[in-house]
Amino acid sequence: MSHDKKQTNCKKAQTCQERQASPSSTLMGYRQDNWQSANHTQKEAVETNQDEGITAPEESDIEPEEEGETTEEIEEEAPKADEPEEIEETLEVSEVSEEISEEKAAEEEAEETLEEEIAEEEEKVERKEKIEEEIVEERIYTIPLGRAWIASRKKRTPQAVRLVKAFIQRHMKPETLVMSNEVNERLWSRSIQKPPRKIRVRAVRDTEGTVTLYMAEGD
Image (cartoon, rainbow, N blue to C red; front, side, top):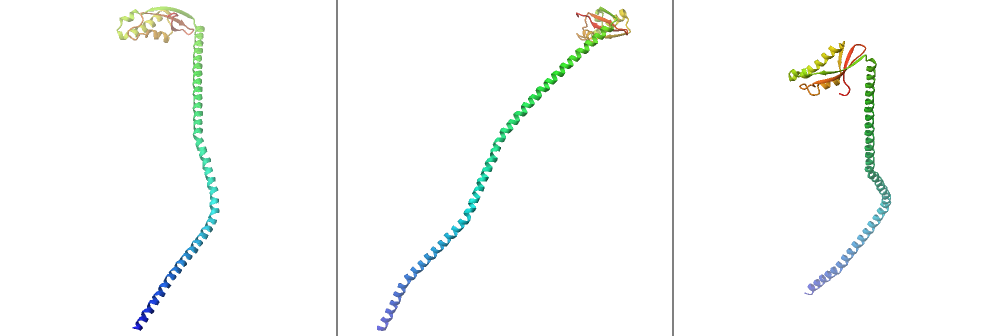
């Protein structure tokens, strides 16, 4: 029995020693872990500081470039903002130039028409002067046209024209007879059905023997 008690006491002593040893070992392991973690964090801090020291100048170098880019973008945007104003100014200038060109074209056309009218008037005056110089004989006749109304309605004005020509042929015996537009228009003034009952004309003979009929003055 005494031997068994000794064995149990020895076992208890061993277990107590193990228990006493185990917390110290756990504490030592915990301390080692804390020490290793602290060293690891210090190394990481040093590495990050080194990286920051390396990257800092890069960032400092990049920042001015970015500032320069932003200034360039602002300068580019400023002319773009001015572009619509320039376009409006160019459009206004083009509209003004078009208006001026149209006014000039209208003035030129008016001048051309005036020149043409003046030229026509001068030609008429020259013709009258030539006719007056070449006039050999001039007579004024009042030709009756009542007989033209005997014909049918669609033949009255052509009959009146024939009556005028026959009257001049009988009284002046021209080599050639020319009827002016004013006499012809007067005969046809009231269409083919209603010619005038009489007409007053001026017959002019030139040096070649041709007789030209004009409307008498006042008719």
